[in-house]
Length: 317
Image (tube, rainbow, N blue to C red; front, side, top):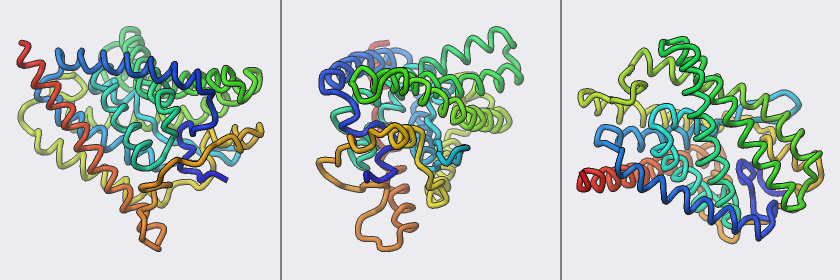
């Protein structure tokens, strides 16, 4: 059986090759456009936030939380990233996280990486962003609108992304739509509650500590605190990762229940598979080390992308 960590995201074998290729094309086009747009809109003050947010989301995704029925869920973070950075910067953050997970940790297949990017770096981001903006227009720009908008954005981003995954499974012939759609939608409606609550908690914390980040205009003063505080939180989440639920996540649970778990293919290579640092016999320590390595790499990649795009934007200006 394929290890649980691999099935946090879609593994190779679940989707057909033609659909995987099509989703790769869509992902490249949309993320390429996000790179161009972020080069026009990204300022120097947002660049550190991109790196820190990518690190926190990566570490947060390692902490599965239990859901009723013997399954689990984990933070995706697309809605939170969109709220703090806007959709273009959020797409780059999520692309960094999902890309590093696939390439370094063998979490999600390489052939289906385009599908995972479409689901988590495009759909989750834009659904979360649209939901948040809509609720804020209705409920107001105050604290209540922010928190309610954050919950709705987090919940809806998970549900719609899961339904997109179910449709992809159906189009690939892996599971019929009348089975995959209700199964994925139903379990992720519950998982989405966790995503919504985590999003609300993060927004409440930032509202009290750094309200300027929620306004999209981070102040020059205190940038070092953002760097240090965010990285400390990311490392702390990585240290806590061995406490994650051992239950299968939503996709793996559906695959087991409906009999297509055997379609998952082993990765073509292994670097830090299953979020276990190689050569470390203690599993908890191996998980912590893998998480810390991932935090550092994701932070560095996201920060490099952010500063490169910021430089291009300033040169164009």
